[in-house]
Length: 202
Image (cartoon, rainbow, N blue to C red; front, side):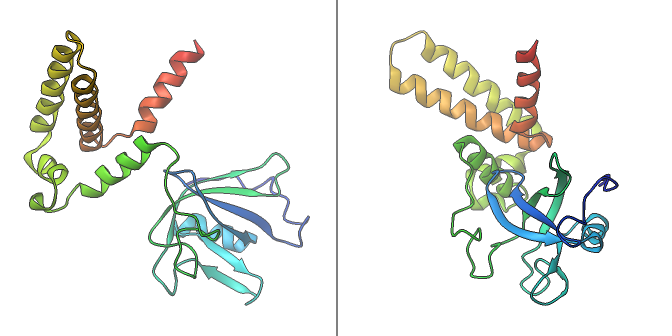
């Protein structure tokens, strides 16, 4: 990725910038590290987060020992250009203690739909016999799209009656299959939400 570092103020903290690391999907804060200019350059070129270790006085790529790398998604500088917000895809636990975050929190999205989407994405490419979701992916895009149509029709049918339980269950089925279709097409719920937000601004 490209990132303009020309305005960053490395002098304020003796050549280091604090880097707040956040999961790009769940938005959970995972850890805090420090980057000097060399660590930032290596992060940008390798795509894996690299920090400057103050205790070891050397560059340190997160996951170089454990294999639990932090894959770079994007970087933002704050308004004073002296702190970084780094979005990543974590590949395994982040903390050296084995927990998801350095604050012993589970890395889960606040929004359940985000959690569900993450589970659905993890099923893509899995053996069809391992789960219903994996079996849907294995049948191809036409079958996935067909299921969305079927569930939509069933929801419309239930909307004509007054059975709350049946209606809500069909609504849940449609939402689930819609997320499967988004994933099968290579798109995300966040992209759809972005379009809705733009429309709302108008």
